[in-house]
Length: 367
Image (tube, rainbow, N blue to C red):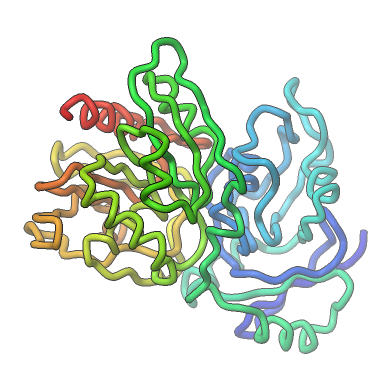
């Protein structure tokens, strides 16, 4: 095997073997804690420009299939695993993970101590890194890492969004029409709505309020996506206009942050983020604890207790992460809008949060 190195922006270096495509890549080093679902992780546009470290030691066991991708391509900037499978073992596999990474030009590294790397990121915070099998001089690669763009201030949704609108029809009886603003949407999300009789018009992230209304939508869905929500001024302005026009709004992940900013809250970067399929969140309305799927490095800065007066009336924090008290959801009292910071479509992940799509339907029924 060809040697490869990973260098963090604080200078710590790991040496391993080339995995996937040979070459060189840069991005923000983050860790994902899911024991399964690596295909969904790789194809989640929210991971654009991030080098993903898998904490599970064995990756690639079930290969890659043609059904579970969450978008049209792999989006991660780089991939880091400890012990890759020698061969896939699943009747659904069509090719190995290694071959798919190579075919899509995704540079990776294997055979390193991912536990040590994860602990380093947990203690020091997510940071830029480089992975290379062509420049194995740590100091040379470090200089390139330091020169690479940071995640703070990055406006990335336009790089992952659909270029042309498309429609996902309801399964069975059509009940409602939703306009989904694609900041980096996963394919399972409109499918979850289709299961509930909702037809989705998936629109580019730059769509205006008039273009949203032209679809005849009964409501608006704000999708997940990558980047710093503080840079998404145009998206925030559009959402504020849609709320003024009395369209119900449901947002997830990046969409939660955009909605939070529309309400007037700030956002901030987490130390190392929430990524994986085992994050405990409490629904404050019911007291129920859900195990949920996450992928976010930023969060909404809103008061955890009480109702905040905003330009659109009262807004409260509806969900909170039980690990660190990060805001995980918002609910408006005077307009029809709510959001969560995590992924209720759960691809991959537990289905504890599937009720949120039912809550969206209830919001539409009350119009």
